[in-house]
Amino acid sequence: MAEEMRIVLRNMGKIDPLNIDDYINAGGYKALEKARQMGQEALIADVRNSGLRGRGGAGFNCGMKWGFSYNVQADQKYVVCNADEGEPGTYKDRTIMENDPQSVLEGMAICGYAIGSNKGYIYCRGEYPYVVDILNKAIAQAKEKGVLGDFDIEVRMGAGAYVCGEESALIESIEGNRGEPRFKPPFPPVIGLWQKPTIVNNVETFANIPVIVEKGGDWYKAIGAEKYPGTKIVTLTGDVNNRTVFEVPTDTTIRQVIYDFGGGIKDGKNFKAVQIGGTSGGFIPESMLDTPIDFDSMSAIGATLGSGAVFVMDETRDIVNVVARIAGFFEHESCGKCSPCREGTKRIHEMMEKLDAGQGSSADLSLLERLGKVMSKACLCGLGQAAPSPVLTTLQNFNGEYQAKLN
Amino acid sequence: MADYKEIINQYKDLPGGIIEAYHALQKEYSFIPEDSIAYAAQVFDLPLAKAYGVATFYSYLKVGERGKNVIRICESAPCHVAGAQDVVNALEKELGIKMGESTADGKFALEFCECVGQCQVTPVITVNSKPYGDVTPEKIPGILGEYK
Ligand SMILES: Cc1cc2nc3c(=O)[nH]c(=O)nc-3n(C[C@H](O)[C@H](O)[C@H](O)COP(=O)(O)O)c2cc1C
Ligand code: SF4
Ligand code: FES
Image 1 (cartoon, each protein chain N blue to C red):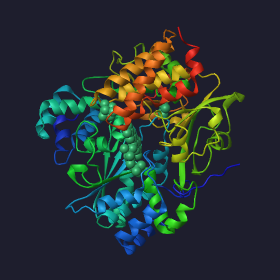
Image 2: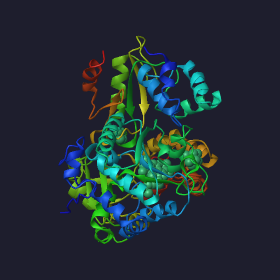
Image 3: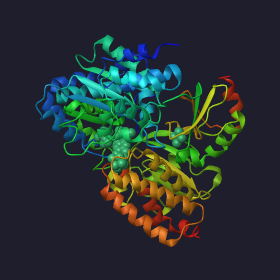
């Protein structure tokens, strides 16, 4: 039986999240002190050495990213915490912020020290006004205690646009614009918010930082999978007995997640499919369940770890119908800036609805596949690039479901 | 009810603050009054088209009137398979309106939304952003009763 390992959620259920003294008594803000004694370069080197990779989905080495901003000379730099959490099936960042907001603030302050920034923003999705309240209270307490030094943190609210989770769209949104992704390069660590060097990291990434600084990069990189070390918070949804959130080492397998932690399939039914990484993730069949959840193992089977959302479907679920609904999501969330995505998501949705209604032909299936492949290469941002993934992976792994619904 | 100009003015020195101003308007009125956009454009020194473009980009923001209590039903895949459609049917029946409409007395607005991050208790609806989980048609009258 696989076991939970709480690094990010180390204080969950143990402290009062709205009492900073609890956090401090549990060892909080010691890491920030230690970071300041280490010096910027040694700090960044140790975070890089830990192997911590971004938990927002792209899996980029965190310390390396910080290094880009550190190396740029600028009169102002920014630290941005991505708390947009729009990926359907994901509620891990909310869990972190509700249970231990100070750990996120401390992680941001450590980043601020590392790159030479005195201003942080938390971009929290508009659907979480109750989390915004928690964050504002936590920030007020941290300021009153003086633990953040001269590092200031401000909360900004998103407004229901999934694409604003993409870092350059998020930056546009903080600037008060429509949340449309920017052309890259330049990347945000060099030219970001208000044209200044900006580090955007996910909530879970920041919450890892204090522990890594405290215990050292060598300690961290010995946990979990070699190339994607540490833990991952996973949120289970769908047809499992326990729809719940937990934190596991990254070498845990999908099967362990579903059966050991999820308690298996609900109502004694059989497993059909699991979609991991949120709604843009691939659909995985039974035969691949022994794959570890780490970033690279998932990529190797044509899937993604993404946000860590795990959406389980039992034998009674209609895959074509679920993918049609997902296609509707992408049509709705496409920002419209580039045509492969604006037009492509619309056409995919159209064809999926047709197939779902039993009116599709095998010609539609090959069109879908071609369109999907073009989009995954031609779209400007990750939204459009990943949008065809549920279609392409189900065409591959669950083709029978499509065949059964053809006209 | 507070004047929309006063609300917007509170954000005029906040860089990029137009979205925060829109949130504040919506908190007060449950929507963004059409006229307030021209004023926001003036305060934030933006072309009207841009102020309008921002307000209409975000699905959480609604330009123009709608019911006071905004009911949103998550239709993302996990809620979809957990029976969101039954909840939609029950809400439409109970309120006598269709999705996207508001009740004649101005009390309720009914909308679809995507995942609101409460997927441990699918299907989920929110009323004025407060989440309700494991919603069944039987639970609808009780939930609506809190707002009547
Ligand atoms: C469409 C889209 C949505 C995204 N949504 C999120 C999100 O909700 N939260 C997040 O942290 N990253 C999200 N990302 C990834 C960010 O662009 C970025 O890689 C991440 O915030 C970097 O932080 P990390 O390195 O700590 O993961 C999204 C990317 C795309 C393309
Ligand atoms: S891929 Fe889609 S969401 Fe991304 S920029 Fe293009 S239209 Fe916008
Ligand atoms: S999928 Fe409906 S709340 Fe997340």
